[in-house]
Image 1 (spheres, protein in one colour):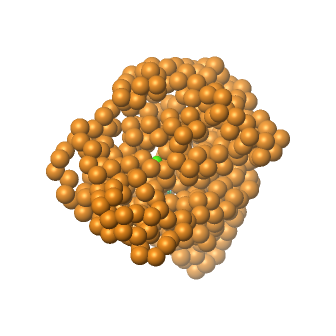
Image 2 (tube, protein in one colour; image 1 turned 90 degrees about the horizontal axis):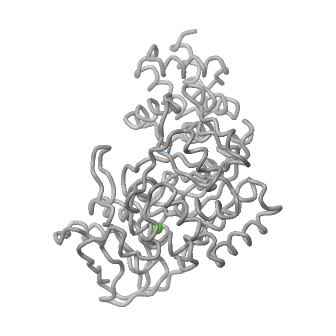
Length: 433
Ligand code: URA
Ligand code: CA
């Protein structure tokens, strides 16, 4: 088989065979196919697309390019949740303890963040002492005892995706639905869960800028998952403005604690209940999605969900007394308000730019090597659709430096105030199963 023939075939719009896709992934992973040929094929896929069978073959070839996690020693149906990425997305911190508290095993392999704020592990490290260095046996034992554990990424999962994603990043081929879908699904499948719940974001802070594209991506991923025996569902949710109020690591931890207490932001709470009820239903802990939702609401009201957060943090060495005494979490030196320059209604809060502002404060990494500041970030006092008076604070900046003119400017440019009434945008666009 020759790579040049595979490139020409896809360039001309033909379907690739299973063997051709496997040949490409294997050869690119082991280095026998060079970057320039892989780039040409990616560009051909970008323009010509792939049918369902090709997408499934591409996904499974990437799964088989490295190790697969074996979660079979964990009792029950393992459900994983994945978000396609957003700004101030605190859902994982809430959902883990929430669904674990009703008996769904959460075996979470997580990473550190790149970009606007840290990843789940960075956020959890706001609890002094919390660590994710667990052996495989400790991890499995913790999930069986606690129903939840978070471990750092280890082993050699989907090396083909790592190489391809880096190549796509510099060849203008990131934004292709078959390539994004196979990239995400290969990682989820290799991570070992039985069922997958996807949160596909749409809007200025997301890969997919409109609902039609987000829907196509969601349907493609659901189809891939279901066709390889992993029951998959997807929610399409808004990421035109940040989710919840908080953007920043310790600030998001506080927001997650409030949400588990039942006093969190309305949008974050609603999204967690929507995604969580799908997770509980797929794990067969409820007969219907509605019943699952009721179980989650009860777990919040009874305090069971918050108790689970405490025992989870304690079991991984963290100081859970922070949950009752939020002052013990990392605190920023300065709290600076951003006053509105006009009266009216909030029309836009661009998630991507606000994320960038949070990163400039130190909440996120510019490069993999950057150190992040867990205390800093932004808390929104208003959301799209809210009325505002001139001089009233739109948001509060938590900073360890007083010199933040640039950040303030960026924030002013990310917010638009309208003279006429604006209605709040829908949070959930569609549910796909
Ligand atoms: N996230 C991924 O993991 N892969 C993509 O291709 C895009 C987003
Ligand atoms: Ca948030």
